[in-house]
Length: 303
Ligand code: ADP
Image 1 (cartoon, rainbow, N blue to C red):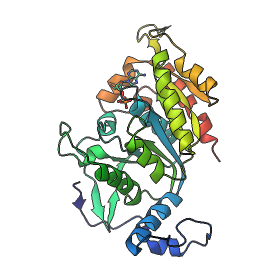
Image 2: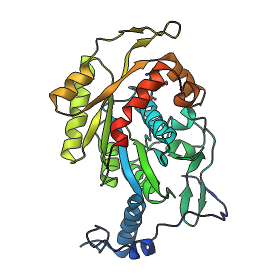
Image 3: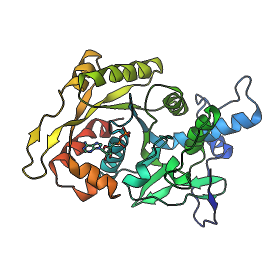
C-alpha cells in the first residue's frame, strides 16, 4: 500500500484509545481488554470501535457474483443519500475489481496520510476510499494473500479519518467467501446488507446463498435489488424485457426478505460510469434516476 504523507492543519479528531476513554458506555465491547488479547490488539480494536461508533449507519452491498452491478448500485445508493443531504462515506473494498475511482472520475487521486490516519478522497463532501487509490496503475493485478485481504479491509475502516457520518456504504467483494466474510465481521454492528442480483432465475441461486450467508452472520438483510431488469430505450423511454425477469423478487419473497426494487439496463448508467460522472448527477431527471432515488427510502427510515 502506498500513501503520501502530508501536513494537515485541520486533522479530523483522531480516533485513538484516548477517544474511547472519554466514552461512558460500559456495555461497549471495547470497554475492556478481552482474554487472550495483547495490548496492541486491544488498542487496535478500540480504534476500530471508536471509528465505527461515529458512523450512524453502515450498509454492506453484497452480490453472489461479479458483474451484476454491485458497484454501480453502491455508488448510486451513496450518491442518492448524499443528494438527500446526508453525510456519506463510500468504501470500496472490492479488492479484485475496485471500479469506484473510475465510476466517480477519481482515478489517480492520492490518499494522504497524516497523524497515522488515511484521509479519504473528497467528492463534493462525500468521503471515498477505494483499494484502487493504492494501485500504481489500474491494470496492475495484485495477488492478495489471505492475511493481506483481511488487513486491508480492517485498515480501511480503522485507519481512515471517516469522522462523523450518517451512512457508510461498503462495496464488498462478491461471493460468500473469506473476503465478504471479513467485511461483515469487521463491520460487526452494521445495519445490514443490500443484495444485488440480476433478474434471471439462475441468479436466484446466488441470492439464496447471499441471504443464507447473512443469516449465518446475524447480519440483517435490508433488501434485494434486481439490477438490469429490462432495457430502457434511450430514444423513446420504453421498457423492454430482456431476460426472463422476476428471479430476485421471487427469491426475496420466498426467503422472507424485503424486495427493494428493480433497476433497468440503461445505457446512460454505463456511459456515466465510463466517463467518471455519477449517473444521478448527470441524469438527475431521468426515469432510471427516479427509480434509484426510490431505493433509498427504507435506508433513510433506518433508526
Ligand atoms: P459489479 O460490481 O457487480 O462487478 P459493476 O457495477 O462494475 O458490476 O457493473 C458492471 C458493468 O455493468 C459496468 O460497466 C456498469 O456501468 C454496467 N452496468 C451496471 N448496471 C447497469 C445498468 N442498470 N444499466 C446499464 N449498465 C449497467
